[in-house]
Image (cartoon, helix red, strand yellow):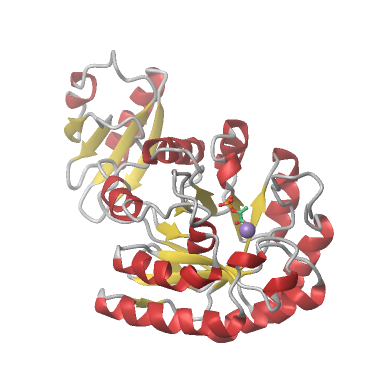
Length: 346
Ligand code: PEP
Ligand code: MN
């Protein structure tokens, strides 16, 4: 339920509405806009008549949010959510490019990749250290040692870092080292993890599960938002279909659908959605043309010897080309790439 306050409503009136929400056993979410203050009353509102709030001082109108995801919905927050990330904004007119290896493998591999993607125009560095691998016999990631390398690469390049969490037990470590916590496809419905992330203030990149619907993705984001963490980016990373020519099928439809249903930034991962380096750049272009706010791309200096996802990893020179092409498509769309990090970390 959304309580829209009158223009010029007082702090006392707003607090009174919030107090009434609490009395009804619901949670309040305040959104102060340029024109109106909107207060979300979230919880089981079925039995609560809108008149409960309509009669309160300062209330202009009360609207029921019809979608099951409340805080993620555009009904609740009509404008795009834009949030800063170390010098640039995510979710606004500017396109964000996150790039780096699938896995952090060694100091040399990570630093070489980080410097290369930065020089090519990436805004943030990715690199997994806890890898959710299908086989327990394959490389599982460097763990905390990998996070120290990530911190070094962050320092050397000035880029914020994006790292995947695979268990709630890693949360403390993640908060210490990481600028954006990635929730992978396999954990999209790890509800205990999502709730714990909702209690942090670290930005989250939430990937769509490989067989999850768009609504399920939005409901997953709601677990994070309802905990109080408003900085969630959604990531389409391909879904399982009958097609076997590619690792997954890029659901390009998901981009405009998500952009219309939610105010959250939408990122595409063409590396996992295609599974093949030859197709990544084409699908990256399509993503920006379809309205995505950013991309996450796997890059490796020597893909043939990568310890994970080498087949879909771009060599740095191919990534340079991708950034150029994506920049051109962005211009056609009336957007531009975000400026690159200019300073080293202190
Ligand atoms: C990854 O980003 O390396 C990864 C494991 O992605 P996903 O969760 O989309 O499979
Ligand atoms: Mn990967």
